Image (cartoon, rainbow, N blue to C red; front, side, top):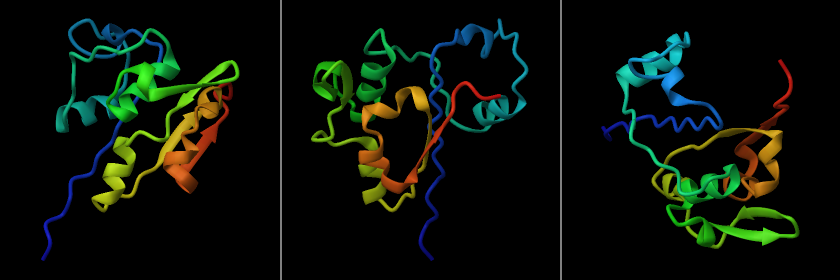
Length: 126
């Protein structure tokens, strides 16, 4: 029997102060995230490669600097789909990938790497 591959959950949350959600100064109540952290791998020394959302996300997906990971299309930066990304690497290794993103970043071309496995939600709904 083939060895079962581990599940991978890549949780990317933008624009909050991690001190309020993790560690000794935590003030939030997040039992599900707490459980994921205690039973999985949690990186507490992550440093972003860019000061804004889109270049930073594109850098994380490609493992490159933002000036390589993005292309300027009109007034918006988008993911450079000519660069290999971790989603395609996971797919080549037999993983099924899925993404849920807020409508505020749907313009960055994530549909090019997630294909039909991309859900966009209204970030202003409750």
